Length: 52
Image (cartoon, rainbow, N blue to C red; front, side, top):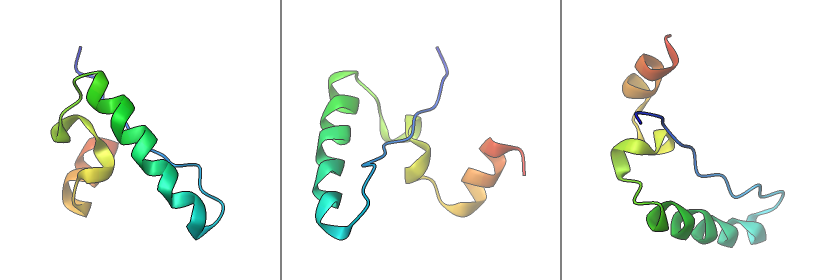
């Protein structure tokens, strides 16, 4: 449908960054591709998506 996603670990410490794998697994189950996940974009692409 053209929507973009962000994978967020909701980490409050470095130890909790392991939770990022849960977000990645969920995105994969939903058939999300790299181009669907905006926190895989470089700064130029991100600014374009955000309208900056």
